[in-house]
Each structure stands twice: as structure tokens, then as C-alpha cells.
Amino acid sequence: MVDYHVHIGQWAEMYFPAHWVFDELKANGVEEAWFSSTSSCRYCRESFDVIQKTLDTSDLPTALELYDFIKNEMKEALSYGKSIGLKTVPLYWVVPEFHFSKEVNLSVAKAMEEVPYQGFKLHPRGNHWDLSHKKTYELVDEVFSYANRHNLPILIHCGYDDFENPRFFEEFIAKYQNVMIQLAHCKPVEDTLYMLQTYSNTFCDTSFVPQGVQEQIEVAGFKSRMRYGSDFPITYWYEQLH
Image 1: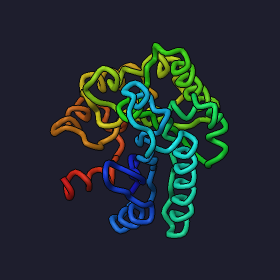
Image 2: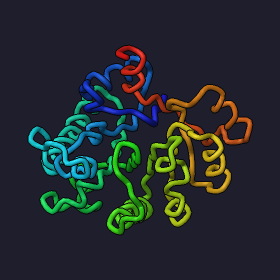
Image 3: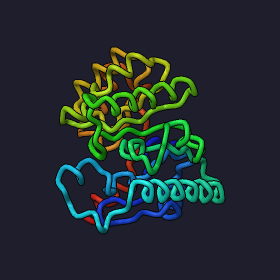
């Protein structure tokens, strides 16, 4: 079984190490896991929200410190996955502040060279993606262009607010129609169906899908473009800890 939506790392007050996540997946029949790090949601001193709210940054890592932490976290995860015979597909969770920091000095190509990533993740709720901001717009285009050139997928978090709607990155999805796009969560279903109907390069996944939505998408004729995603261990956090 393939799980196309898995995480390791820091989530809220909990840290989920790769060895625990991967052991649980394998024990439950998962043979291949597409994963990214929720540590990418952590604030750093250069985070947009931190700067705008003028919060105390003394206890926060710098962008470089957080980037290096995630880089090492992903490398260790890949090593552990290999040691237990679990096929892993690492996704680079793009954090805009990493690419805007002079200290990190990061391009998309450099990030993809430093860890053997096999795709991208964009999370417009976990990170600040303001497409009216020139540098942010250019970064998104850089991600899609790189994915297009190297035949890599992009997983996109979707939700009910305008900034996370399945159509939020539509301009780039339309421009780069050779890039496989996975729209997570199928929220809202109307916009998910629009994207599936309009762009043959779009797929969706089952992670946190509202009741009845999977059946609705299958009835619309898109069963073959719905991938299994557990969002583990976020599901565990919600069900067992909250």
C-alpha cells in the first residue's frame, strides 16, 4: 500500500520522530510513504507573522537554524526508512522565509540538491503565501518551473479559506500542465471538482476528507485520480491526544 500524505517532525506541542512514524506505517501495511516535515510550520525569527506582530523572537530559531534542522531531520528519516525496508518519497516543504533570508541564501535548486527530495509541498495555511508580493510570486513560479523540468509532483494543502482554496495556485497549475498536482483534503469539494475537471494533471487525496466527499468525487468520474493519504500522525494527534 502507498500512503501519499505522511508527516514527520514537530506538530503543535508534539514531536513525531521518523522512526516512530515509519514503524507505525510499516506495521499497518504501508510499503511506500510520501512524507514531509511539519517542523516547517514552526515560527522562526524571520517568519512573516512574527515580524508583523512584533513578537519576542529570543526563543525562536533563525531561518538558517530551522532550515538546517529540517534538512538534517529529512536526511535521518531517509536513512531510517531505508534501514527498515520502507520505500520513502521525501517532499520539500517550501517555506518562503528560507528563500528570502540572506543568511540562508537558498534557491529552489540548492534546496533540492542538499536533500534528495522527489517533489514539493506547498502549505498556504502553515506558511505565508501572498501572491501579490513579487518575491513570493517568483518563488512559486520557480517551484513549478523546477518541478516541470524535473518531472516532480507538488502536494498542495487545500481548505475552505480563500488563501488555501484548491484554485489558489491555479495560474501556475494551468501554466505547467506537465506537473502532477495533488490537492490535499478535497476542501471545498466544488472547487476540487472544478480543478479535476479542468486540469488533467490534478489529483486529490483522502486525508481529512469530509464525510461523503470521496463518494461524490468517485460518482463524478474521478475515482482513478483520488489517492490514499492518511495525514498520519496528524490524525493520531487529533484522535488520541485532543
